[in-house]
Length: 217
Ligand code: DX5
Ligand code: ZN
Figure (cartoon, rainbow, N blue to C red):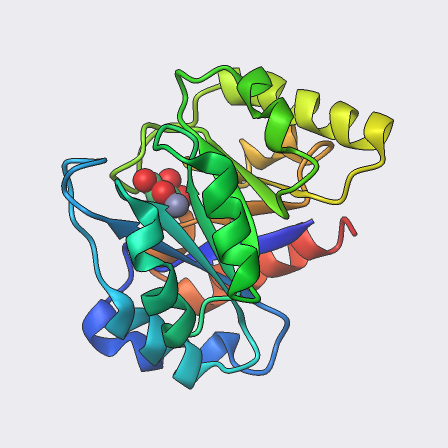
């Protein structure tokens, strides 16, 4: 398992100092991009992604597009430093967009909302590099974990093993040291946002999570 640190609720004006503990270690950074249409909120744009990549060049940058017409953003986020680009199943042109991301030399992820049935992903599972199961409704950090996501990551783990596929299984929303126990048998990664970024002892908490999550490998 790997920790995928969401910067959504971090102090974005001072992202370079926020990322200091991350520099030089094998970190994955989760970047939530919201367009105000696919979700009603907006978040940040490619400038924060680029500043994060520049501050921590060895980090893997995982861009989560909660946006309609995600294909319009792929080049912009590649140039900003993305390694993975994840878009939502609840948009359109899924296969074409997976191919577009691959043509840019990036890894492609597909995400599903809490009300979407996981089995709709089956036609795409041989092509994607990551599946991101939303365990909250997308749009905000700090929400409570939705237990119906456990069955989804379990399905994805069993399907992956049965069919010898390579996609990573990731989960996003409400993950903390408690909820992590339910998903760790099934996930390769888990996004953690506010449990770390809102901690009074952010650096200590970050390392606690990193050690707890990454030791399960
Ligand atoms: C929610 C975002 C999440 C968010 C997770 O729409 O996709 O990545 O940052 O934050 P927590 O861990 O606070 O639920
Ligand atoms: Zn996210």
